[in-house]
Amino acid sequence: MIPIPHTWVLLLSAVLFMIGSMGVLLRRNGIAIFLSLEIMLNSANLVFAAFALKLAHEGQMAAAAAGQLFVFFIIAVAAAEAAVGLALFIAIHRLKESIDVDRLNILRW
Amino acid sequence: MWVDLIVTVIKVLVVSTVLLTGVPIMVWVERRGSAMIQDRLGPNRVGPMGLLQPVVDAVKLMTKEDLTPEGVTGTNRFLYLLAPAIALVVAVSTFIVVPFGYDPGLELFGHAIGGFVVAPDLDLGILYLFAVGSLGVYALVLAGWGSNNKYSLLGGIRASAQMISYELAMVISVVGVLMVTGSFSLDDVVLHQAGTWFGFIPKWNVIPQLIGAITFMVAVFAETNRLPFDMVEAEAELVVGYHTEYSSMRFASFFMAEYINMITASSLIVVLFFGGWTLPGIATPGGWLGALATIGIFAAKVAFFLWFFVWVRWTLPRFRFDQLMALGWKWMIPLAVLNFLWVGVAMALGYL
Amino acid sequence: MVTYVFLVAAAMAIVFALVAIMHRSPVVNVLALIMVFLALAVIYAVLGMDFLAAIQIIVYSGAVLVLFLFVIMLLNIRKVERFGSGRPLQAFLGAAASIGVGMGVILAARQLAPSFGEVIEGAEKGTAIPLGKALLTTHLFAFELISVVLMASLIGAWVLARKEDS
Image 1 (cartoon, rainbow over the protein chains, first blue to last red):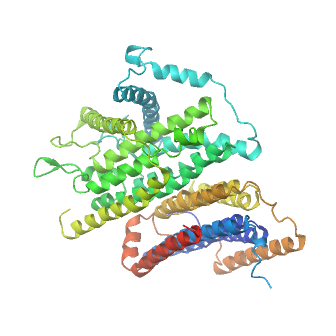
Image 2: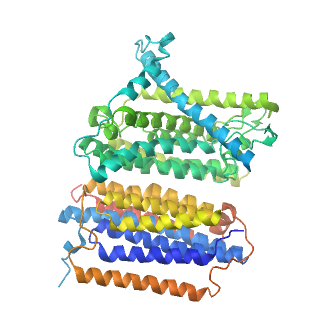
Image 3: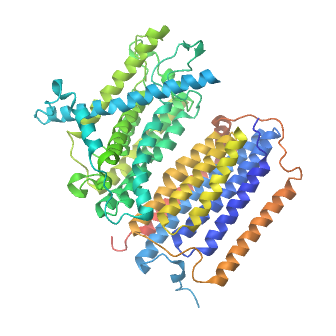
């Protein structure tokens, strides 16, 4: 019996999502934006964990396992995304000598 | 509750004392062993056969001046000071899931000791080990970044690339063992290897999974940054890489962490592939004497692999960095996958 | 006891997440993010999801963030702009928007659970066995797709980051 209400986990997730989105909107450095995105992804993971906890409390073990596996899949996709994204930043840095996203304005009209 | 706590504290004290005293002994073995291999004498002035040389080294390191390089200020200074601490903490805390002896229901103060392992209830033992072990790379990376030195920085970059690459091979080569055992607990892994095939071949994992054992050993050499894979501190290219700027006890922390990692790595090789504390022909013994015998068997096997580390270091030349990465990605990972395919096929056909 | 561990870990996650988005040095951002992920791993462990805790540390702290540090060191990014510097209007709008979104999510969470903070009886700490079984039976197709995605991203990263002439 885990004495933690799943709503607390949801709250923490909301706060982390807020912090992450603030980072994405306010930073101009590519790497920092990427890090904020990772925070947002993790807050989504927390929501899955929270509902897995709720379902486990209610005795629906198969659904609870599915909730945990969603987190597993998100972590795997996030790893793939980080690899591609960082490769992109290396390519951009090679081109522009900077990873400031304000300088990526070739496609701007 | 309280007795549990006391038993755990005793275990922690014993294990950390053994680990920390193992370091000077290993330093002595390394220096005398290298001397033997290179046909020199090695340290032989302090104590019989130079046995007290590590004590002198320790005193020397402790009394040296603790320097911070010029220009390392503010945030960088914090990272510079943090790095050796991370190295030592990670090195010591990985050992707690390694079962170093057999517990036939022994009691201390009328209370079960719960196995010769510091954290017996951690049923995800091997995952814990990989998780904490993977944090060790930060010590190297932060030391490289914080030192404000280009050789240190190069060492840190190499460390991050090398550690990630070889961690894959290391984890995949363990999958075969986990499949055969059906558990993440290292205790179960050892118990599964007790007994013999045909009455004389020990049921150690190394025999059906020779490829896995070899890839694991190679990957572990890379993870502990030992020659032939010590690209991170390659003396001939990078001065000494990430710890170029460190002196005194901070340097000693990195040094101790390296040797403790070696001890943990050897223990892991023994536990996963060479039967842990089991020995063919010896049934599970009872009583404190039997438990001590299993600890002795385990220690002897670990000592062999520690010697193997020294032996390899002073025999093989260093790889080039691109060769190292090519070996990791093009040979070690496919071989590790081959091993776990073979184990899967053998299990499906009922041979394992 | 478990409740206090959860609260401390949650507080750590929030504080270090703030450091991660606000500090000027990219290396410190990554380090703070490691602390966030460690705190989240503690939370998973406290919730009885040991396997997730281990995966969180192995994949995120052990691999993804090392990759970030590798890129930061490779590109040698020492110092970057101050948090929200330069454009006061955009910074204000961004902060307001994200706080609004956060408040919305919190309210939605309260709506979703009228009996706020109530613990439902039942359920025990789980192991990795049911997870593994579900992964290789019910969710096998997703599992295989993930491996294709990983392979594709491996090749994609190689194509993107290599030099043209080589």
